[in-house]
Length: 336
Image (tube, rainbow, N blue to C red; front, top):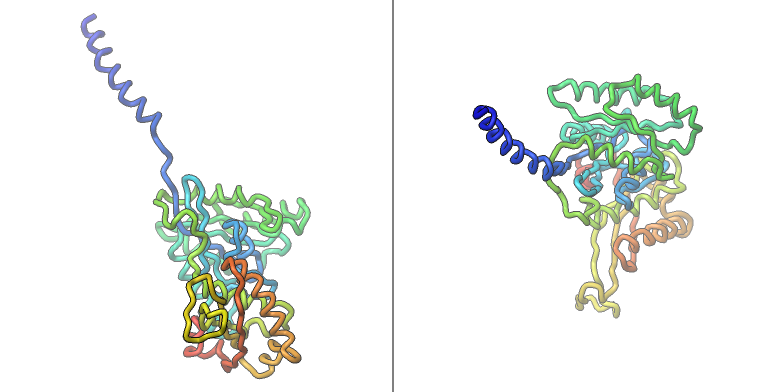
């Protein structure tokens, strides 16, 4: 009997010390980097914008619209996701194309999760299989990233076609998750955020909670101008367009060049250059009597006004940088 009393006296306190710890345990905060990859025009930038909840990447029906690794930041209770929207992986025909593909490979080497976009309205092709091979090799190491197949553009096909596509995707590669979505219609976007957050490693908040992108104003303005320039031009021209913001300056409302007004009180002027490779392309961008360039300026200005929260004066110039896509020095000057 004394032995039993002693047993209860030692066991009971141990039970009481463990119980509060179980009650107060908090789930670890998760954070990390997620590369959004895929062939050109599979909906990567549209998806990135939908996940962030604001336009941080330009979109277009033209191939190779995305030329940089653009970071969008999604902050949720308990998790912060840093999305990296990458250029479309393609068979390169220029030095620019090679550098874009290299950028994707470099991005993949440093992320925690890869979201592989495969559009529901297109069958799996050689380009998809090439990316899948790269991802399989990436995962063959001791610690590879988590792989999520994202079936995009599900609003464009019927449920039966989605089910068939899901089966094909599951046979392409061993994925941790396969999620069908429609970024345009907003279907399953929140579900995808939850899935991504669930596979991220434990980590701290990496960016201020109200920050949505790493891009600065000059880079975002240059992209908005290029987005406007891409609309309605011939198929061969989009690859040849590059945009550089030369300056963003506050000018005196009376036009006095010697007066620097207080921020927000003057006229905000954005001066930018559109670069093309040939004289004929310059003529297309400018249009008859400058009509096309005026349209580009008008469309871009709307987006820039919204971005900056004030009206701007947009001064555009079209310049020729001969064969810049193949020239290492010119690629460097243009930010590639």
